Length: 421
Image (cartoon, rainbow, N blue to C red; front, side, top):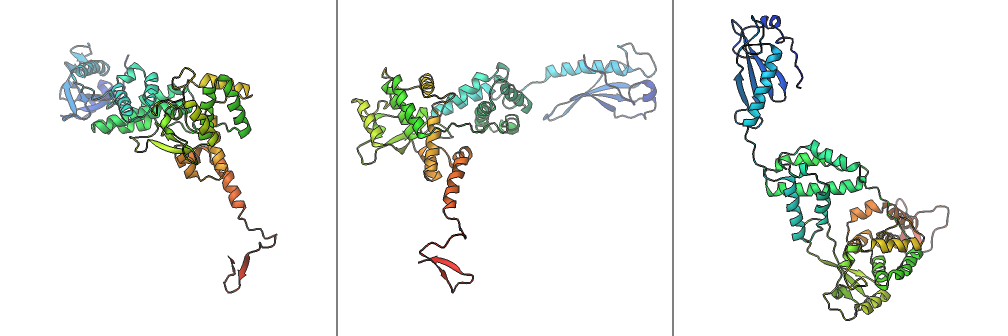
């Protein structure tokens, strides 16, 4: 039941008697968009109602309620209305007016925006799982909601409900997918774009969710993993070794073709397919990644006269590796190696850190692993700091030791400047 609104000027006949007669009503807000007014006459006043319609050419719809105010006669909820009885009549009128409002057809629902996003990903070779992840967690009510009319609080509620059952980092990745879908809808229809703030605010990332928990394995442990992987078959061992040597993502390795093996050269390499991350269609589809001669020989032997366009890495049944095919066998391998809660992506993280500590420039490491410098610096900053410390320490001025040979002081400089002979 709607609450009763009280008003010191309109609430009873004694208070209304003190008001000056006026052609304009004295207004009181009942609910959002609904106002109840009292028009003071010489005799009994009249109750009027007003509806506010945002964005309409005529923002207010005004009407007079039947009967008169109880200024002189007792209220009977029909011909004579008290202030509280007028409130009930006003809300009944408001409900009838709402039925008459012609609601604009949704230009694009959230579900349709997600369909558009998935089609766009497929067209430009992106990862359609970004759309599937969102669809898996999208309720029917939210899916049918108009993108143009959706509110920030609805999206924030959806995000917060996900956070009750998923890790914060997973929630952020899912929200990013939905935001990308809504942004695409707005790009395709500028009339929708006026509502961008709703998802910018509602889907704002959960702070401190992407704390790095990457496992870095020392080289002897990686060698043990590769050796133990042969227990799951030579094909799996080769797949693991490629990931360990190149630091590639699993889906990149799975998309390698025989023609991507360049072993007829002094320094063998793989033309690694680029990842499906990022926006737009990528002009560069493959990047050269160096491999060892030993790995190149193993790959050539495994090809077994397969056509250039066939997969380079296959399972025992001859089929290419698919998503999560590696999860269970690698878990068994990790257990044999004495590791717990380590996934196959530890090979990628370890490869990146190994290159950083070996002095490979960050830009080159980023290119080799098909990622950005920003991501490298954010995720592996501790190891970059260790490397930078070692480089800087070698150039420190130590006044407690004698100058190194080959450096003399220029007596003509003021102040004295040392220069190399």
